[in-house]
Structures are given as structure tokens and as C-alpha cells.
Image (tube, rainbow, N blue to C red; front, side, top):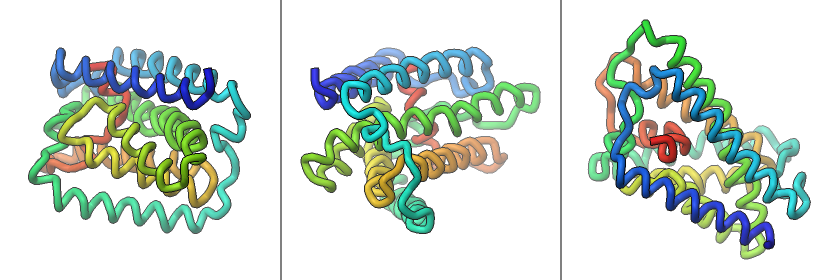
Length: 234
């Protein structure tokens, strides 16, 4: 099997499981990030996904496919990262009131509970470090490298669509696809997955901070993009 066929099969199976779990089990418990079992389950899940991605990349030039190399310009990466944030804010204002992606995702707690702080921080480490690392390798690393043969913009769009589908969400799909495409554009401009990992991690960290800030939660992309792990675990 070619790397592209293997990656496509992986995305199809991943997305199918995500939607199956979402439609059969519904939204997860909103206090799931206060549970230590979530940390353990997430780490196991990401380890499995990482091994699959690593294995698929091994069917070709692994180092080239995963794009784990120094970016051509950190300044360009910074500018594009800011642009992604601005673009998502505009999309949120335009579509957020109609689609309510945060309500659909439903994994962030409504209030801060200090007694569960340690578990929340541990889950935060997984969501802000482990998840971006694995997801960027899977989509902007391996996925983009395999699809770019069909054209740069084709790869950017398809990677965004694949990233959106992998979350198993419906109303949040436009936001997730746009975010995924934005990260793919970043990867295409700097030839590295590292800046995308940083942007992705900061995005997830903002979502977690906003969730327990004590202010009324706004229905926006931040709450829809806590991480791809949630659609499979719940």
C-alpha cells in the first residue's frame, strides 16, 4: 500500500469512528477534563495515533514526509500565525451565532473547581502539547506532504477538510476545516510542522483558559477546537 493510500484510509477510519461515537453517545461529560482517567486514555490514544502516523511515514522518506525540520523563517511563521488568529476571530463573529460550535463540542467545564486543578492541568498538558504535536504530524506533516503532489492549494484545502472531519462534529466543521487549512498554509510557507504545533498549542491553551475564566462562555471556535482526541474518546 502506498503512503497516500494508507494515510487516506487512516483518515477515513478515524473520521468514521469519530462521527459514530458522536452520534451514538452524544456529548461527553462537561467535567471530563477534571478526571485523571481522561489523561491516561488520551495518552494511550495519542500514542496509538502517533505510531500509526510514524508507520505510514516509514513507507516513504519519513523525515521528508513529517516535515520535522527548522522552518525557513520564524518571522513569516509569526505573521501567518497572527493572521490565522485574526481570520478565526472574523469567522467566529460571522458564523458563531448561527452554528454554536462550542455547544456541540461540550467538553469544557462551566466553572472552575480548585479541587480538580491537578487533573485539569494534566489534561491541559495533553491538550496543549501532546495533541498539537501528534495532530500536526498527522495532518500538516504527513498529510500535506502526501497531497502536495496534486497542487499546493489542493493540499491545503484537503488537509483542512480531513482535519475537520476527524473531529466528528457537524456544526463546528467549518471552523475546524478553516483552522486546519490555515495551519496547512502555514506549513506550506515555512516548510516545517513546528510553527503549526506552537500555534495549535496556543489555540488550545486559550480555549482551556477561557473555559474556566469565570466569565460566561461564548459560543466560539475556541471551545470547538479543544482537540481531536475528544471526538474519539467520547
